[in-house]
Image (cartoon, rainbow, N blue to C red):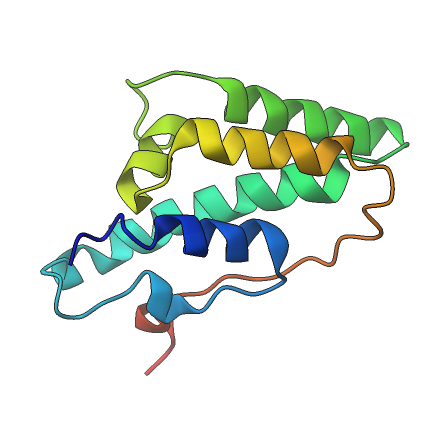
Length: 129
């Protein structure tokens, strides 16, 4: 099964719900278990960037507006040289950067988005033994 086939569903969960199951990204049979630390760090950066964008999209304080602008610049960047750039992380997790950007823009433009509850994302492979 192509790992990108279900990426739209995973993306919808990331952007629409308050939780994403670690099993959606961590499969012991896909040959990447030796990269779990690096992949975990990449997921943490990606999730934090999305979280910062959503949490501050409707912020009114100077701090919130500044954090949102930083997240927005990261999301809109097309830097393929930096390993933790938005486009590289989308590629790593099988997301279409344009689709993620569209979903975030839709979220930003919603007037009745309500309060965004912060969600921690921690893959199973990083839990303490």
